[in-house]
Length: 62
Image (tube, rainbow, N blue to C red; front, side, top):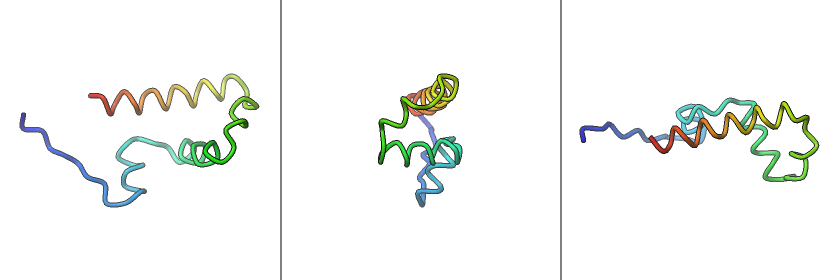
């Protein structure tokens, strides 16, 4: 139970600590404004983004 807790001092720190790439951060920002654009991406790009998000969410659960 001697787990070190990490706190992000800024949005940039949080993004870096979470393992979010700049490309994924840009995608999420655009997705919030225009979610329908996700469906217009090529399948391979959507899969790549989904895999990155899955990996980040998995890391939060550990």
